[in-house]
Length: 187
Image (cartoon, rainbow, N blue to C red; front, top):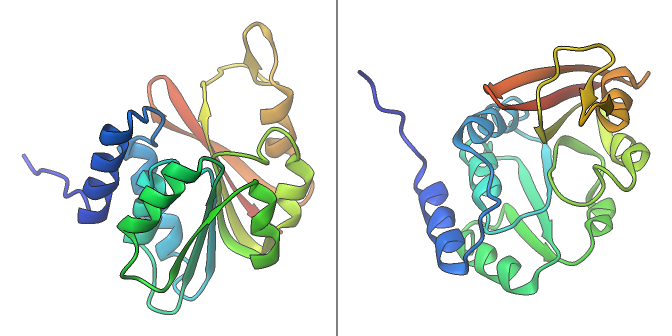
């Protein structure tokens, strides 16, 4: 049986998360998808909303091309500082501290992992920040066998927004039996 290799920066960011008591890092299944998305845009501008301890950032970094830039933002100053330390030796990576809207000055994005602010509070703006052909990844969904998708017995309006947005070609990808990611490309 083959063992999956975990990139060293992912390991470092996971250690930061453990030391900070941060329990909301992305899963390895989502992480591998992030690395794939970043690799698909080797000269692109890659963004992340919700750095946390930098685990998702490290997965994005694992696919980062030599000509690409990665910018991520975290509201928690301590977490942002710790995450920035993981990438201090790579000038392609910028860790911002503050509201997710700080990302706007770096748009448009070729890949946008919207894990923190924006996904729920301003989904229209999230779509607008994508370059044509840009990839959007949104995790932390619970799979739904229904159409329209449901969560907690109600229509999941947020998921429906992204899956049916006229400027996006979108699908939902099962990452584990109990979690899914929306992956979309801007037309």
